Length: 333
Ligand code: PBG
Picture 1 (cartoon, rainbow, N blue to C red):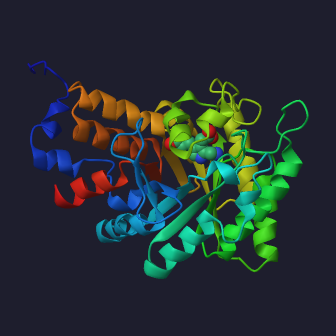
Picture 2 (cartoon, rainbow, N blue to C red):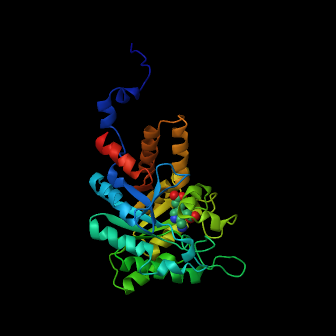
């Protein structure tokens, strides 16, 4: 007579000791998975705290150098630049966005000259440059014009490529902009410039602190971006957006925001098998910081768990304001 075995399986066996947990671990986070977004200011020796993003500062170009050095030291492969433009330079068409000697091209040149091995990514969108805070040009009813905007974005991307940027990342959500930018890059000899497309970018309230950081919140006022950014209710539409961007020439695709949209990350990775990135946006960062400051969550543990969750969902990398903190923990414990 055989004994009935109870329980039939003991999954806890593999969880019992650190060695067997490590043996069967399916996903890992490394510094190479992280991209550091930074806010860059004009001037010299300028440092401003961003109130809604504790630990994040707006920095002049010279003050970015130590951060770039830290990225190189820790193995964070890319820094993403977001400009804070003087309000006197903002106008309805965002014309400063195509100035070859503007803040972004100057920052790119300075960083690439000093840290050639560090990847530099620039955002292609007009919101830091427009007096109304929208990502494009407006018609008389306030509707964001598509094709007219794409013509400016094309020029903005060329300006960034000419300054030597490694990756352009259109975050504007206009139709056809990836194809237009790819054509412009090819036609002007920038055949190595990579495009990371913000493909599935949602009209999210989680961008609030970022808009404070770049100073577009006041300009935007009560208006929103729902006529170009995606409806948070949709996921099939994300697949169509990603398919278009790949067909138009994107090298990498992105989903944004991050943690509340991990289902989209997973769908995109499973469907397209493309290098897929997620943006843990300013509001996600602010929530973790606020809870940690109140003693309600363990800062480092929650940070690492959230970042690992992106990897588990299928992301190849994460744009995160925690990039240096997380890389330091990974390298130095
Ligand atoms: C601008 C842009 C935004 C973010 C990145 N690029 C804001 C927006 O679309 O309003 C948000 C990043 C963040 O919240 O951390 N096109």
